[in-house]
Length: 506
Image (cartoon, rainbow, N blue to C red; front, side, top):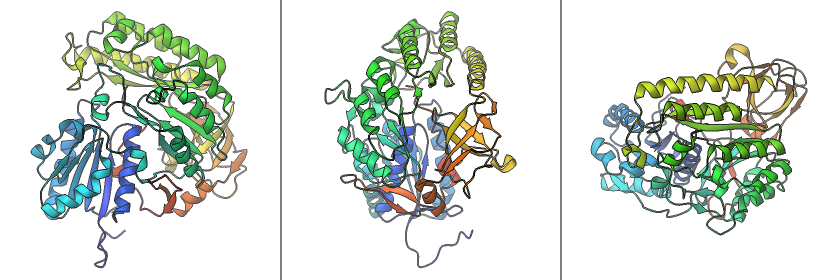
């Protein structure tokens, strides 16, 4: 592909690079929608952008090193093209503020988590004034879902039910950067879901920093279970997922709603963080290990086929070998399908960062390796239980890394597990991302399943049609309305750097 631009083309081309959790990925969809509405065009693969936006994460200890390293790599491009603009937003921008411009004076715009809607204005102001614009608000100026969004998937969409968090976990900086919880009205959430479904999206994931606390702002502690049931009444919506719930707020009515609403997937990602009650107390997590295990028992009693995943932090300040053994015990009893395991790293601005008894790095590493080995063993055992079972797969885009070698495609089962399958058998023409297939699992590995047998059912979908056309939905912000479709360029490799399956370890 030629990288030379048509001299008549005066549109400014942008690229958004995303780091961090699903909330950041969804925010980046809104940043793309805002820029397109302002007349910008997403850059094509191989072209040099006029505007690069970093949507940052502050969860990891080395997040700032990663950002400033990437900013340094862009400095020569900025020197070659002084008209190029660089913007930094997200959690790290909210935390570091003017420090970013001080350390990287070639940055043009810095904006925070509370004012992503200001980006086009800030870019224009920086260009006009020929100086950096830093705007960090202390509270939300407008709910992000009222902003336009260029969706990245034709078949699966994120829908925020809330932003912010009211918890005070000692290891977590998110509440300080995203503020207290703000809930959307149920009608607004459902309107956005219906708008996506009307254009062929078949799966939605309800997002919240503490998703099952939804309703706290308008005084209905059963609001989340009601919302799940309401999603079950939307024609054409085939799968509903949500992330991430907090054990403190996980009530029986949510379990009942999951079990009784046909399109709600039997998948649960619920962070454990530690199996030690002493460490949980130090983390300021408002549950204990037995409460956590009771929830899992209740979920499995209502949904024996449920796949349960979690987050675990190893090496929290003061963690002893006895504490770690308690974590291993709870992991064994929980029988997680998979787990995101984190080595604790101090996050400036959190109480845990100044706690005594920080665990030595080599001890944390050794415990981490033991935990990963145990969880891999459990994951493999749990996945073997699925061998021989027929599964319904929503064909995914970009999930399989060995497609070119094996010619397999990949999809997600209803319980969220990744399945690599052979596209042969009852295939109706080509299998596309967004289509649905039925096949039988033949082999298991710790992190995926294999289905090397014929497909028995292949259902072509509107989402597959859209993928084939090269279009993506774009939801308008005002009153949500219905999505419109356009043909954005292929997403650059650098834009796909987010770790979308990882939460903030909350």
